[in-house]
Amino acid sequence: MPVNRLIYDRELLFGRWYSESIDVQGHKTIEYAQLSVEGTFEFSFVSFDDKGDVIEQVTEFGDWGLVADIHFTLTKSEMVEQEHYAADLNNADNYHAYQVLKLDSHTFQYQHIVTEEIYTLHRIVDVVGHC
Image 1 (tube, rainbow, N blue to C red):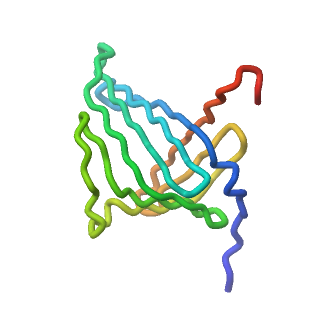
Image 2: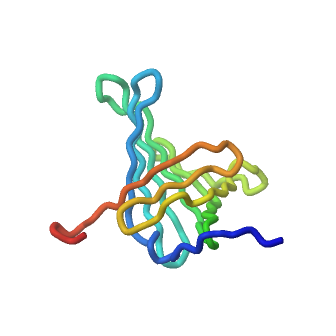
């Protein structure tokens, strides 16, 4: 029996997004995401200590897709502290699938299929006064 799934428009994901979180040690992490029309992504994560100093900066590159309410990513390489590394495509940790909980022109909220962690990204608008 088929599962009832919401169908989200892939074009809603094109563009730049961000999120901000604070862990239990008080460290802030900011994520910037660029989802391109041709299905590639660039995710940058910048972590700060409780004084505001950068602890770590990592950028991941890869492919993404959206089918109905399932968003998926495949990390192909990453940049860590200015060093570029190819991802091990045999490593399952480079493949992720998420159920989309909310997707509109301002908010992208999704839940990891395995870990059940929920993430919320907000659209970055480059043109002032454009919604």
